[in-house]
Image (cartoon, rainbow, N blue to C red; front, side, top):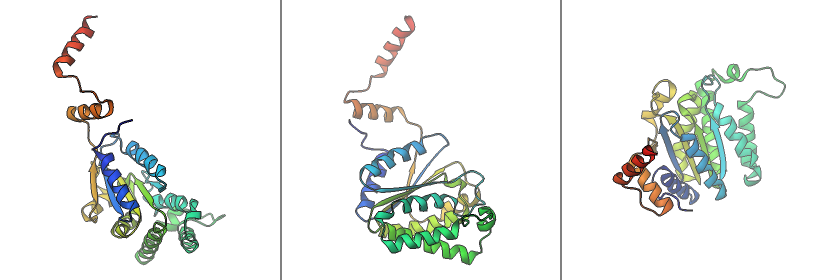
Length: 239
């Protein structure tokens, strides 16, 4: 079936093509709550998987800012789940880093207590190690990393995003973040003005012209004129 040839999905398709060719990209998708950011990511993820791109997704949770690197824990597990596609030394290093972030099995330690007040030096070491190893993981197999709801992210997770966004151009990686554009407080609000160059994509409500173009591209038929709309509306009301 026909697909629209412009808009956010077209921008993401271009970014994904660039990443698969070894020219990594960082895209930031913003929009108000409920506008369709998660739906857009689901569609893009489906396309990426169909192209053989390794997918990893982490979601920031409201109130989870005390847990350092929270969204990256899920991403590291996703990357390690594709261990057969990773060089053995990269897999070993990722497992070692993951052990640094998660309480050991059988430990009663609370991650929020264990990692919530990491010293600056320790956090910097983890950020550097995670960024370097994730980049290496994308050298052999194209990958796409999605971080959703960055407006709820903890500071360390944002530090890693910022560093990785600077390094991504050297790898076959598409790095995507989503955030609400109306939220400007907390760690996210402080980071946004300092983010390295990225492709900013904003979702907004569709205008009539957008709907007309979409219907025309998908159906191959022209959109009804306003006079036709009024005539049909009048007939429907009279029945």
